[in-house]
Length: 357
Image 1 (cartoon, rainbow, N blue to C red):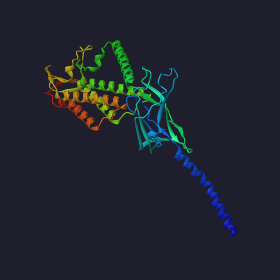
Image 2: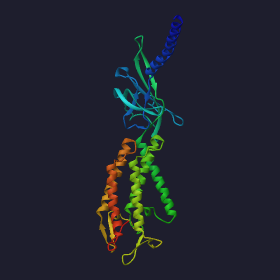
Image 3: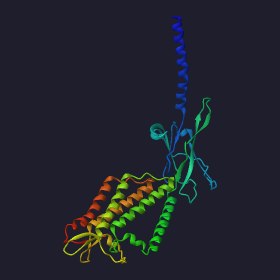
Image 4: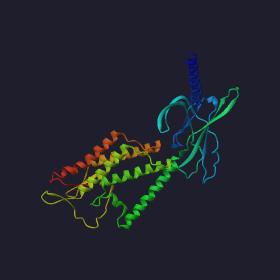
């Protein structure tokens, strides 16, 4: 009996010795403070900082953004500490920890960085966020505490990034124009059909290519990484390419007397006179050569222009590629179907001949 009691007591002591370090570790984990700062935030937007600690206004929190200076000098005011204009306590945020998304509770603070000094020629700068505050110690005095973000983040200057994006796009277009000129064709030929008129389908594809390229390039300058392309944007670009491809094939099909059609390409002269006009985007040409307004083409121009405008504005203001709603993608698809329907229907009605680009 005594031996059994001895082993029982020894077991209790061992369990006690094992549980004490674990409880201390859990206690230290609960006291650990982490600072989460989203990457690629814009200076024109409130700078968001989330800390896993209860911070009050009485603690006088301050934010310091320590930038790296490999090739540039420290700018005046760069080491100034910033005070938050909003302190929201007991907030829940979803953050990435060890590759997993978890919900944590803490304090969200917003800072105004519109006057933060950055180089006028840099679209972004890389900084290390450091949050400091005063907290009462066990002896009753106040002590300064600080927490450093786990990684550096990019701080974007949208106006400078837009300028660099426009300049880069202009250089690329100029290079393409140079290559086209070397081949003996003007740049406008990319937008024209086989008849030398301005092609709505080609213009739409070129417009989306330039706009999406500019937004993706600008986003890359802000974060130095390839952005996530929304699925709706891929669908929209794919529809434009399919529409352009079908339009190109149908405009190249040959119609012979008697209404019999063949899929052989038309025999065109080696040098087609390029005579594009903006009116070509909303007009069609009948078999007699007279221009007629096309409601389907006007509808396609309207929805394309509206979607492109909203996409650029939303992407620039939000700092991320706008995920175009499926409803707008559906409207664009219907307008493109209305644009293509005369080409497809007229193939089955030889008596009607429209020449569209």
